[in-house]
Image (cartoon, rainbow, N blue to C red; front, top):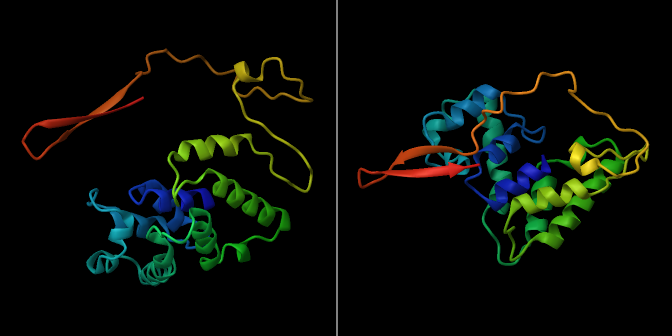
Length: 202
């Protein structure tokens, strides 16, 4: 949830991150209200849609009240600040939304602050150049827990040669795929000149 909040603040157009924040236990909108917020409008950001009075009128009564309360709390951290770091904005948002109150375990709170410290080291000028770098760094982080256990999920190739106590290989009984998966996916989007712009992705 806090990673989704980070992604939403770094990139206002990250619709998936914004919907994850609105669905999180901090806010708790249901699927029907989330759908009502974004349906039929792919051009505006979720944050912009939250300020559309007509669209807010299509939400359930409880969803509308919840969305308005969340919007008021998030307003102070959404705009990029010249005096506040991204780390501080994420922490402030987490506190404003009541994040600590939902955590019963002190070790989880400690891990949140470890996350915030890591975010503070990676951010540049109040933002992140690449959110994927943060996610990759998080994959390498060891988090504390009551059991002091450590779990790593990796490919068989990466695990080769490592000395670990236990290795679980999942899905060995599955039939291999056909190998016909596309290397690239693309879509054509009409542009203002009547032509088409192509968006490609691995």
